[in-house]
Each structure stands twice: as C-alpha cells, then as structure tokens.
Length: 230
Image 1 (tube, rainbow, N blue to C red):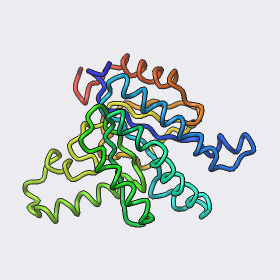
Image 2 (cartoon, rainbow, N blue to C red; image 1 turned 180 degrees about the vertical axis):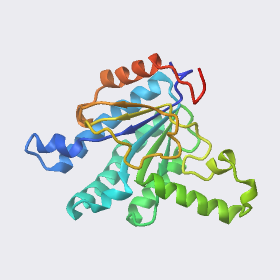
Image 3 (cartoon, one colour; image 1 turned 90 degrees about the horizontal axis):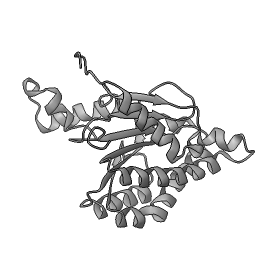
C-alpha cells in the first residue's frame, strides 16, 4: 500500500460535537481527540506511509469563543509536552504549517524546538497545520517567491511549490474528513488538486484504526487518472 500512497491528509472534525453529545465541555472533545491523533500517527508510521498532515487549527478558528480558543492553544502546548518525546523516539519528523504570527510566544518557541529536535528523523513526516488557511498559504508563498526571486517569467508550478508550507513534499494522495461535513474548509487548496477524498460521519474522537483502514482500502480500489485516461 505504501508504494502507492505517500501522503494522507486529515480534517479532524467533530471534537466539539462529541463532547456536547455527552454533556461535556467542548474542550474535553478536543482532549479526547488527541488520543485519536496518537493512534493514527502510530498506525501511519507502522504502515510505512511517509507523510501525514493533520488540520489542527485554522485561520478561521479564531472566530470561536475566546475561552475555547485559549483552551485549544493551551492544549497544543500540553500535547507537545505530552507526546514530544514519544515522537522523537519513534523517529517522527514534525513540521508545523501555517502562520506563526498571532500565536503565543511560548507556544511558538515550543513548536520551533520540536521541529529542531525532530529534523533528522526519517520514518514519518508529521505536518501539523496550526493557524493554517489554504488561501493564506498561497498568498504567503507568492510573497516569498517575490522576495526570493521576483522574476515572474521563471514562475511555474514546480518553482512555486517550493515556497508553499509543504515545500517539496508530495501532494496528498488521500484526504480524509471526519464529522459528517462534505467540504474542504480552506485546507491545502493548492496541494489537493488531484487528491482523492473520503468522508465519514464518524466524529474524530471515535475514529479508529479500523476506520482508517476503510479509507485506505477505498483509496486502493480507486483508479486515478490525473486528467488522462489512466
């Protein structure tokens, strides 16, 4: 499977609803979702899939109630402290996608440190999209290109992609979205031009290895044409 599938991206939707249905604070759903993250990261590495990208916090999520936003930011710090050493031991390289400005300074320092400490790891690259928006990424890539080169006659898809947050990583082969919604929500807009999409009503905290395998097996049955005849 890994020879065909190099990159999986996931929109982890449904944490808040999972908690609300149980009469719990929404943040408890996000905390429970962290356990699902751990399980899926571990299974991705076990299967030999080289790249996994998780949509953790969007540029639009700042519109949520202040208490929830502050709780999520604190939870990200908690997750780095709780799982950072495990990621290092498991040879996982961590990359953060998205805009750093606007995030708390302490969180930014923790993100930078984790990226530095895992930079040489090679078994799996884990991209965490934090304060990320697809349109924002494209605009920032244009700005980086202009600053670095400025010669628009040299611009092509291949020269442009190195200025994206994902740089030279392969585009996602498969995008999974949990939680029942059927939309992309401003996620990896450049990279998913030919990505296969898989949606499930299962809320993220209830998403299991079995669900993950269902998505991978469905992907394996698809015939990808990339605009041609296959």
